[in-house]
Image (cartoon, rainbow, N blue to C red):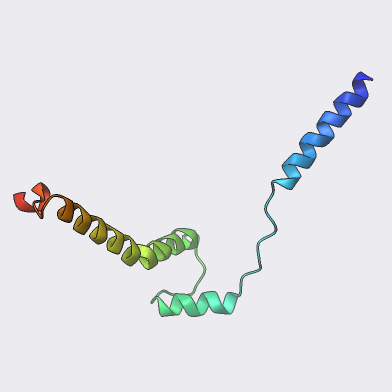
Length: 91
């Protein structure tokens, strides 16, 4: 009886781990990656630093969104404080 219970618990734990897994990633289109790299002004040769370069490219792509959010937050703070921001006045 103890062996059956142990087997059942191992099977349930395995099924839970498998159920939480993500599906296989979609295959990437190499031609699209190279075209995007050329558009960004990079050489399309594969290097060991491609992962870091792609991370920097993604960060640059969302920098405008981040700065817009900061600008909106600064405007909201200025509106709440009557336009008197101690940080901007000190500089």
